[in-house]
Length: 451
Image 1 (cartoon, one colour):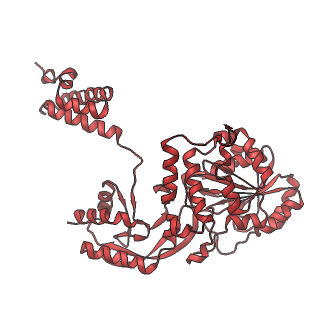
Image 2 (image 1 turned 120 degrees about the vertical axis):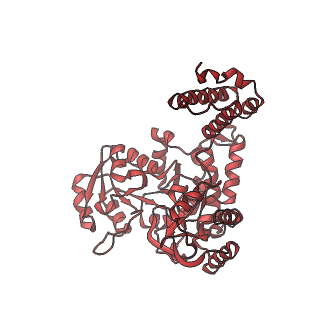
Image 3 (image 1 turned 180 degrees about the horizontal axis):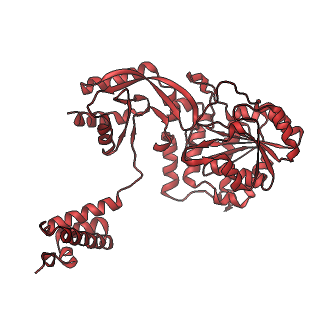
């Protein structure tokens, strides 16, 4: 008789107390599927290697439990970011402030006034949420929030430039992470791309020459994750706005990072702010909510009220709209700016403004706690396509290990995972992007792995 015939049936496995526990945790249907898959894999493995002993019932049930756990394990997990990259796109960009977390939770746990007007008792508009805050903060006439900045660009061009030419400098034909390319978005919107200038230089006269194409707008695009240096030039935004308006054109500024504070105050290069763009004459400015704004993923559009009204009426606006969780968290984040508390409450700005002496003291305390490692001067970066090439001085804890890559892999297997980096053949950890509340777990885990 074949050994495989000695395998228990699914019904036999279901009669065990171990199976009852799995059913209580995962439900009968899913547990049944896992048991069947476990038996199928066992038959396949045994038929390929008949000398291998058949697993007993407890082992089969343990394998089924492991399968269930793997199936339902979350793939979106919190991590500890010890890389020193503040807006780490792969790690979710901006962490939310406590107030934004609370606002998000409040909107999530029950019903809300997402599209309900309390004063009239009738249907309201979700586009009103955060609009007043954005207008008050930036001085814009109107504002609209969509699900990300690529969506904002797509909506603007689809609404205002479909089948019309839009002029853009070759210095600004950017591609950012994930393959997002400005020319591709423009083509999808139905706008006709008209390039001017060279890859390193563009002059106002290049835009003037493009007026023969009967364009509807000039599109100015943030360089995002690269910087042009050397023999390079671009006309100021104010000159573009003047030329556009003298010829009845629009100026749209895709600002990307969305700075609302002057980054130069923190020892970084000056990142043009949303307020500066509007003051220079931009008709519409769009930017991300989860970069330097420090809020949830969102595409934010501010500008002239009549243009915003057109965007709101476009059919794409419904497809690209932000949900209640985004609007709640964004509104709470904007309140920090209005109350002049962004540096103290928004994690992105807390990290940018972190005191060098404090960072060194934290890294030194890590070394003392571990009894291993060396302090090393290093650099943190803003990341997220903001302020390319700009860095912040920091202090790193450097660990000299036989196999740094393997140690990084071990850190990633922890719960929650710890993400660090290698510099000068050492594993380095930057306190700038590690929250103080995470330090106990971080050090406990490091001690266990460094034994």
